[in-house]
Image (cartoon, rainbow, N blue to C red; front, side, top):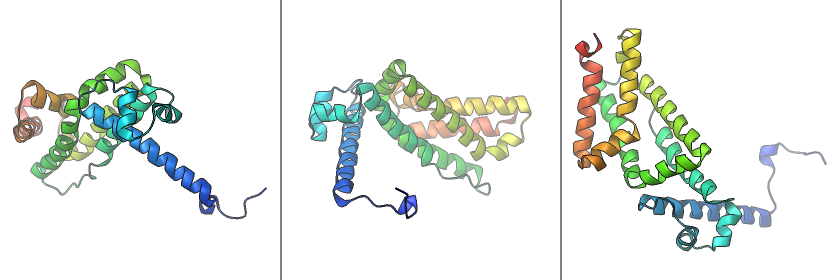
Length: 211
């Protein structure tokens, strides 16, 4: 049978649409429950706890995900997509101090949520190639965004210094950098933000560093 209307306008029968909504809601509940447990410090949340928190049975969890690794990867994807997507586009007319503050505000807000669940992320990337690839994509996307946000300052540097400075920024403003400040050094959020700001300013404004 040929379609008689554009694909985007085809509507499902009411019962199928309701089932589709229910499936989507259940899957979302499972992901949210797993994310909540990971953010509570669970390195590998167990299905029993996930199901209880999501209000479903363990069998239902496995109807939506082939195994826990697939579920964990979906959770990681949820976190990483939000981290990459929510940074606004760079404004070349914005003063450097404002650009640094905006970048740090955004990353601090997202990375602070990762502090408790970082063991979950580290364990997952060891057991899942998909997870490792998602993290690699996040680091690559982050480097590109940093190059866009600080293009004016980076463009003034020689090629070799530009690459080294961008690498340093990428390493400093990675999740691990924030976790070191917050978890390893025990700094409060505002103190961690101040340290980040101090170091980023140094990388972008200290001319002798790039000589």
